[in-house]
Amino acid sequence: MAKDDDIHIAITSERKQRWQEFVEEDENIDSLTELVRHGVEGHIERAQAGGSGDGGVEVDWEPVLQPLQELQQGMEQAVDGIDEINERVSETSEIAELADTIYPLLPEASSPSELDDARKELPDDATHKDKAMATGDARHFAELWDRDLGTVMQAQTFASNENPEVQINDTGETMEAYIYTPEPNPESEPEQGENR
Image 1 (tube, rainbow, N blue to C red):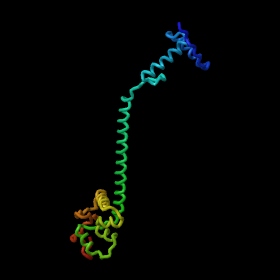
Image 2: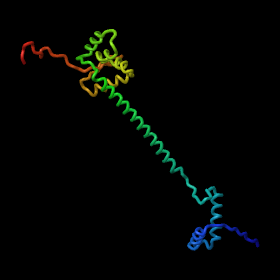
Image 3: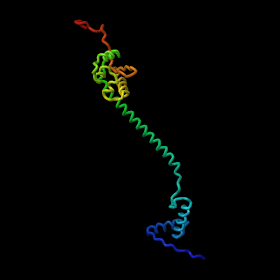
Image 4: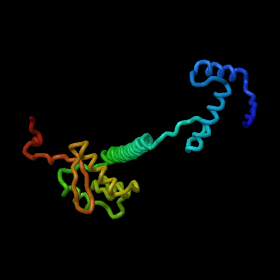
């Protein structure tokens, strides 16, 4: 008969006490030696079976990871959407500010033909500001402020939407904006010296 080898291990008294209490409570283990054998053999079996060997349980994370990845993608899309909204709000704010700047500079006219007349009366050396204020032409506002023509036209449209008295004349090449003021009705004007 083969003789068993003895293995001595050093453990703290607290650990020995905990192991001893476990042996007393567990009906399947009769001694500390059997508990150690059982623990070592279990560790070896788990390691050989592809487990961690540390008493851990092998977990299939795929059912958990896939929904988390989908959630992450959804959150990334939401962040992209929020960024797009913020960009649009910023653009709208820029257009609104430009419209507020343009509005007080718009000419008063009763029709686009008055803008044509004003254009004809401008001197050759008129500045972009003079041209913009006389004609409401988006090109001159764009040159005046070194802005994109499309942005200026959006601002003029915004000003028209916000202020019903602002009229737009789309010439095909540019956009003219003006503050509509009706022509005075000669019949309603009092004659000189006439009292109303």
